[in-house]
Image (cartoon, rainbow, N blue to C red):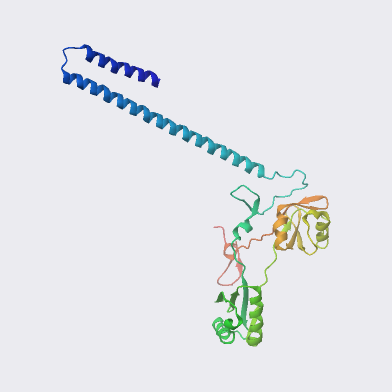
Length: 309
């Protein structure tokens, strides 16, 4: 269509030129005006044609980029779908899914535990809690520490020294060796006035759901090690705490494990007896007293249930 328009314009301009040459009555200045006008129209048309071809090239380039982005999105969606683990069809009983929250990486790789992602940049703390043996205030404890303990001579870096609400003092250092050294010095120089406690981290608790009825707190460890050799667990990695029954009648077992065992157990299912059991974090929601249905009366100081009205 563009070639047809170009041909028509070219013929029309040539007709004007031929009329100028055939006419003998036109003045020379009018003839020159006709020639200049025809030349201007030709230049305008050429510029318009070049601009249209340039825009067409840009449109083709943008369309190719759009197609490339669509292909990348489809490939990424296919990778995400293939990485999903289908639910197992061989589980007997009502086994609810695990409560471990998992996060997929931006590159579409393997899933990570939510705790691993949130605690990736968390620095480990080494703390000591100092309290008085004679009910002194936290400021008095600080004064005793600053008077008798010299961190510079011990080459210890004190990161935190703050008072707690129960009149104790929290001290934080950089390493476990510094913790032991500071504990030894405080006990030796301030043992009569101060008492040092080293906070111990609690082991993570996991719940094993829907275990067989014949599994007890005593034999669950041996059963897990015997029936799940692919986990490469050693004796002592799993410590059973207690078991309880749910409203549905299922029996669950609560265990304490180490940090490495905590990472790998929720990623799999345990074979216990004739059942395949889900594993998840054992989380107990502590309800605030103010949010409960009961309140304390000001007169009697007893619990009473508020009226619905």
